[in-house]
Length: 317
Length: 300
Image 1 (cartoon, chains in turn red, brown):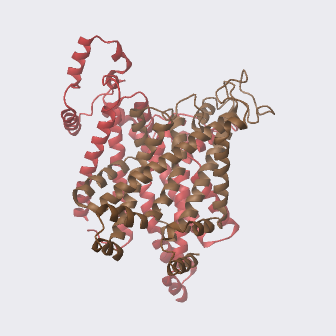
Image 2 (spheres, one colour; image 1 turned 180 degrees about the vertical axis):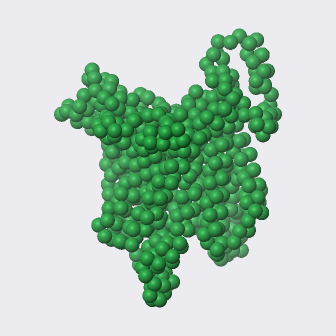
Image 3 (tube, rainbow over the protein chains, first blue to last red; image 1 turned 90 degrees about the horizontal axis):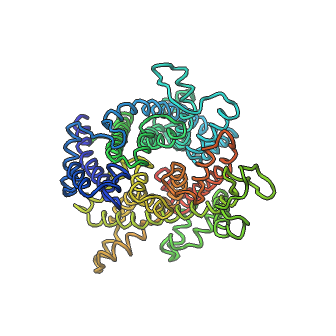
C-alpha cells in the first residue's frame, strides 16, 4: 500500500512539472510588453532607462529557462512570490482563502453524495414508477443547469422575492454555525446540484445492473430479507463506480467555486483565481493553478485508494 | 435494445456492409427512433435557424438602444429590453450565434487535434507517448474552467479565442480516449494483415486504426458541445469570454445579474436558452452513444 502511494506521488512530479511549464509559458508568451504583466498599464509611460532598470530587477531580460528555474527553486523553498497588485505574499493570500473554499467545497460534496446515493438506490428499486421518472427527469435537468444559472435563480427566488437568505458574504462554520449555514445554503445548492445529478444517474444505473446479477438471485433464493439483499449484497457492489466518480468530481467542484464564489461574493480561492486572472496578476495565478492541480490529483489518488479498499479483487501494483 | 442492435450489426457486416460508422443511413434512422434525440435535434435546428436568420427575424439591431430604461415584455419587445434599452429577443437570437459557433468549433478542434495526438501516442509509444500523455495529464489536472481562463488571459476574449481555448482544454480527454481505442485496435488481426501487406505507418494509423476507433470520439465530441455551451456562457458571464457589447447568452446573464434586484426577469430568457441547448446536446450525445456503440454506456 505505502509503496503504491509513494509511486503515485512520484508520478505526480513530472505532471506537476509539465503543468508549471505550461502555465509559465502561457503567461510569459503574452503578446505585448512583458512588463505589463508585472506592473500593469503604467509600464507604457516609463522612460527607457526606468524600463531597463526594472527589467533587470525583475529578471525579465534573462532567458526563459533561467527565469523558470529561478521561479521553481524559490517556489520549492517556500517563497511563493508577491502578488503584483496587492504586494502581499501569495502564500498569505492563499492561506486566508483556502479555508473558505474548502468549507464550501466539502459541504457541497457531502450534501451531493449523501443525497445522491439514497435517491439513486430508491430510484433503481422503484424502476419505472412515477417517482423514478420524476427523479431521472430531475437529474437530467440538473445536469443541464450550469451552476451560475442555478445561483442566479436561487438569488431571485430566496433573496429578491422571498427575502429569506442573504445574497452574499461568508461566515465561517467555526464562528457562527447557524449564520454560516444561512450564507452557505445557496452557494452549496448551486455547487452541488450538477454533481448530485450525475451521481444519482450513476448510482441508479449501477444498482440496476447489479440487481440483475446471479448472486442477487442466489441471495434472494437463500431467503434473505430484501433489506439484507439490497444493503449487504447489491449496494456494496453498486457503489464501486460511484465512489470513483465522486472522487474524480472533487476537482470539478474546485473549478465550480470560481463562478459560485463570484456570484455570491465569497472571498475564497475561486474568487482569488478569477480576480488574479482578470487583473493579470501572474505571480498569484501560477501558484493558485498549481495548488488546484495538486488538490485534484490528491483527490484522484484518494478515490483510487478508497476503490481498492472497497473492492478486494483489485490489487495494487 | 443492445442485443437488437448487435444482431443487426452482425447481419449488416455479414451482408458486406462492413464499417458500421459509414452506414450512415441506418445509424441516422436508429437515432431518429429515440424520442429524446428528436427533441434535441429539433431544438438545435430551431436555434440554428434563429442564429442564421437573426437579421431577418428581428427588426432591431442587437446593440441598438430602443428604450430609455429596461421595459417589461410588450408586443414590440416580446422579451422586454435590458437596462440600457436593448431588445432582449434580438440579443437572444444574435447570442445563439456565439453559443453555436463556439460549441461547434471547440468540439471540432478537440476531436481533430485530440484524435491525431492520441493515435500518434498509441502508435509510436515510447518517449512520444510519454510526452503527449504526461502533457495531457498535466492539462487534465487543472479542473474545468481553469485552463480556458488561463489561456484567455493570454489570448484575450472573443468568439474565436474562446473556441480555441475551449478546444485546447477539451483536447487532452479526446487524446486519451483515442489512445485507449487505438491501443485496443492495434491488437487486432486486421492491423497485422495490413502491415504484412506493406501498409505505411501513416496509412495504418489514419486509414485503418482511426476509422475503427472513431465511434467514441464522435460521441465524446457531441457531449463536448454541451460542455462548450456551458463554458462559453460561464466565461462570458465572468467577463473573460466573449467581450461586450457582443451579445452572447453569458453576457446577457451577466447584465441581468448586475441588476438582479431591479429587473430579475432579464435572467430568464438567456437562462432558459442555455438550459435547453445544453439539454439538447446531452440528449443527442446519449442517443448517439446508444446508436453507435451501446458498450460505451458508463464509459463516456
